[in-house]
Image (cartoon, rainbow, N blue to C red):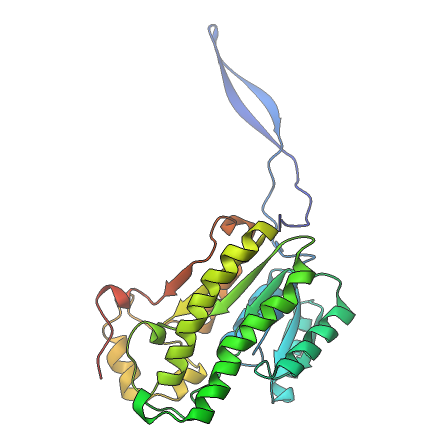
Length: 292
């Protein structure tokens, strides 16, 4: 089930063997796999919203571990091309595919193009999100903005998972949804994103239960304030600084922190982690989020 394609190496070690006449040493061969520097060699990953920020960091992390990567982007091809170039420099096979994942027709075409490249998929990371282009509190939110936010943040990951299932059924796989602490803690001007990310948390639970028998593991990563992300850029600088002073770890989460956790959840070492929404926040929720 979703294990590294690298063959295990055999290692000879000398161990003491105790006998009544005293200790002696013998050379014993163990079938012990030596850790590979590229544990995702032969794996194929699709990362939505991968042209910048958190999605870019995830694409680069998975590529650095050996995975082939499709970089999905919605609008800015130049940004996606730069990520593909970075992956190519790592020696990774990578390509960029444009699609607005909030448009189900475009999402279907994205997977049609993925299937033209690959006959299997091992990793799907639902990183694409929207909602902060018009930041508002709940009572000020507008119907059309809520619909488009829901389409991208909930229906996009939902139907991306459905499209991925046929490609993962043969070998198993991992689906990771990117959620937010704003789904659990009040955050000013964040209502559309917070509510839809809460729905995505619940979707993770349902998909995890239904897909686990197919050896497809579904989990969520729930970061707090992530430096250089679009969410942070939409917030006042003073809010981030006030929050930073309360974080036990002493700093904000970085895109690379998120990417490291995503990579772990895609690895065989996390095989029994299923349906979890893992908070990544430097400990800030242990003492409470700031109130506006």
